[in-house]
Amino acid sequence: MDRLSEDKRVGKVYLVGSGPGDPELLTIKAKRLIESADVIVYDHLPGPEILGMMPGGSEKIDAGKRAGDHRIPQHQINELLIRKAREGKSVVRLKGGDPYLFGRGGEEAAELRRAGIPVEVVPGITSAIAAPAYAGIPVTHRDHASMLTIITGHEDPAKRETALDWKLLAEFEGTLIILMGVKMLKENTRELLKHGKDPKTPVAIIERGTRPDQRTTRGTLDEIARIAEEEGVRAPAVIVIGSVAALGE
Image (tube, rainbow, N blue to C red):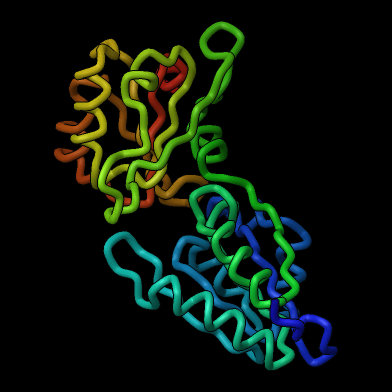
């Protein structure tokens, strides 16, 4: 293992979750680290208000992680974090939501540890819960759902087979949350219907959750893909499937 982490010249990398977008949901620790960082490697999901907090004297690097548009490939991001830390810098890897929920934070932390770089994870509020809450939807409710499952709607395209058990998900009686699922909405809802999910199950799609331009689109499982297309639903969005999705109305 690289022993550079024992060298006082080596900096530290903070994997920081910026929350769902509302700057007032940013944690105190995340704000402090952003304002004191030497280098900030950021994605687009934190949003303009939070990105506007980045200090003028810091080095800012846009990692450009958008669906279908990775400005810097993941392996290069890993190498960048390691290189900046070895320059003795305090590095903030700024991510939307929570860095360990479909944010590839676990992969980055593993690479940093293998390189002997000190790394600290700063959790963030996930949009999977916050966006529905802002839309008036509780993801659990004593009368509706005592279980919650969060899945990715956009699996790694390099996979030969899906890691999602659609039969199990279709039978699931709790709330199903799909993140990064707008592009594959038609395919994902088709899988649930094919495996027996009630076509009239309520669905809500919350775009730009917790931000001033938040919008909620509603429908049933058998119609939501068509409705979303007609309404021009776009990412980032959180998809809520289950009886709780009707509560926000």
